[in-house]
Amino acid sequence: MTGWPDAPAVYEIDTWPWLAGLSRRFGRAVTLGDVPGEVWDELRGHDAVWLMGVWERSPAGMAVALANEGLCKEFEAALADFADEDVVGSPYCVRRYEVDERLGGAAGLLVARAELLRRGLRLILDYVPNHVAPDHPAITELPDWFVNGTAEDLARDPDGWFAAGDRVIARGRDPYFPPWPDVAQLNAFHPELRRATVDTLLAIADQCDGVRVDMAMLMFNDIFAGTWGRWAGPRPEAEFWPEIVAQLPEDFVLIAEAYWDTEWELQQQGFHFCYDKRLYDRLAHEDAASVRAHLTAGLDFQAKLVRFTENHDEPRAATALPGARGRAAAVVIATLPGATLWHDGQFEGRTVKLPVFLGRYPDEPVDEELRAFHRRLAGLGVRQGEWRLLDDRDVLAWTWQDERTRHLVVVNFADRPAWTRVRLPWSSAGKQWRLIDLLDDRVFDRDGDELENLGLYVELPAWGCHVLSCSVLSGGPAASVA
Image (cartoon, rainbow, N blue to C red; front, side, top):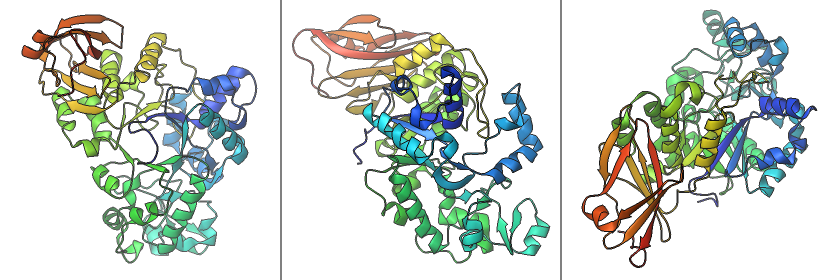
């Protein structure tokens, strides 16, 4: 496809608070251009790093945030000693697609990318197609790129519109929520805006290996027309994304933040990966049957999903999926087809969901046991060859197998113990098999005839998991894949 791994592991870093934390850790100001090598070394084992929020923040957007009573309450809840200077502005209120000088500027990002490349890591950055900051230069220079209204619109709905010179511009929104107060709505139907999107993405592609595209489905013709109606102007015949993606480098990976069951359509329009929010919701709120049903989708669809139990938009996994359930969910996402997304602080058990406007994390103790578990899980390397979902109604079970390796994953995604027999999809008869649990190094030797005739007996506690490496102990060469 792109030269990327088929199932990449992506590590998301909230760049501004991450650098602030490094500055405290090393007792000096740390920017992207002078992150100590030992810190980059800590990221080894992943395939890509998403530096979330490197673009220039908006002073106007920051002022809006500080004047918003609801947001300030969120800031105070996240930081017990919150002060106004902790607000650095939203990374999704972009003033210009240039690296913020306070983070190290373009030169700093160039150094960071080189350090990542030296360790075999690709770099992902952000792109926000739906809106920009209210002080973006295009507001005054190219106002036709935006959804324009009238003085009557502004008078009728001052929260949804703002005055910019002699223009009235819509505030950014999606169709299900009130307008975002700190951003201006771009017009997805405007042909010049579409051409500018290509130019912007090409400029970004010179600085990284892929982008995470914010709320990508908002640019669909149907969705945009449904949100903006008569203000959007004539509806184009072509969809927004296909003609844009066609002009980007083939090895530039596009990851869509996606909701409302738009994942398949985004994949068809050229996105390499899309968020799997449905799986997250099922892992956080539903049961094994719901998760299993989700995993029966076609492999061509699943292989282009991003699995996660946490990101900057969701509650911290340590609070939303605490304890053994959270570990079981982590095993699930780490061993399925598609991409896996981990979030900085997730391994350590952070509990505070930091508002994206803030530039530092609160101090929290590290859960050393949880960190050791996640580091081991992230390094298992079991996703090789063919994936197969097994037909077992008592547990979640699947295998990975190629010419050299076989792995079996069994997860009891329930709050009660499970006893079952798991049928393996390869021939086991006439051999002795050794199963090694890669999560804790336990070893199980099993008779192949029993495995063939009855299946593997599995006994797991509530939320218990096995990630088993399966190999022939004796009785001739390894069995061929069934």
